[in-house]
Image 1 (spheres, rainbow, N blue to C red):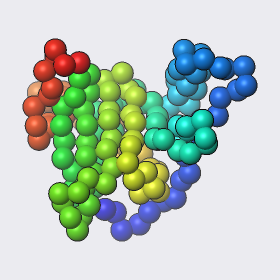
Image 2 (image 1 turned 45 degrees about the horizontal axis):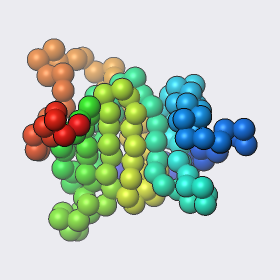
Image 3 (image 1 turned 60 degrees about the vertical axis):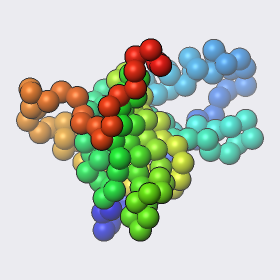
Length: 155
């Protein structure tokens, strides 16, 4: 992990009173994410407790590379319509601390121990910006994974 940390706080995703049903909540969240790309939001349960962190990007491959490079111990897997990065405890590599689900549509959802990711978000974002400006490798368009993607029938 990086020796310096830049502190950030996720923006709580609060729904207006008039947004009551699940489809309206989903539409509101998508609009908010599109209007503020690469802004870290805290998705909340109705109780107000944080369920996950979420943001939208137009460069999921850059973020995949940045997250993979930022953490010293990760396991990369393919999932339906995207990738999963399991961030592991440095002291105990068998223990998954945080899971980052990255979808090809640009949605990035963080689950598990959210605090380290939230604290490191600005550093990871800076690394993603560097990845975006790096020359592209035309022979490698999808991130490598440690395990093969799930069967399409399971999607």
